[in-house]
Length: 108
Image (spheres, helix red, strand yellow):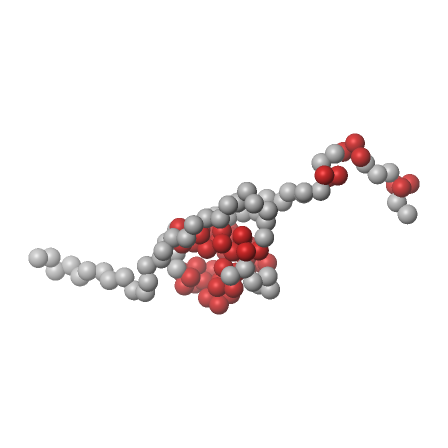
């Protein structure tokens, strides 16, 4: 028998959640589910992430529930830590066609 102590896991084991379909239109809930799926896929607890980023656990829980009242800075900090990023895309067709430019005389 070895005299090496067995390291016991404290707390709960992180269970992975399924990544949402990222091809669907953006919504706060889709972002929340993506953050949760990425965190749990990395086997990180809420405490792990909140301590690493110096944000409160309740704030992280709000982010993962899709609370739109959380400061954007905190959401972006969590996303960066987890390796997630945004892409800004305009769904306005007029932004895609440069031939439809409006001249200064048309503004009034």
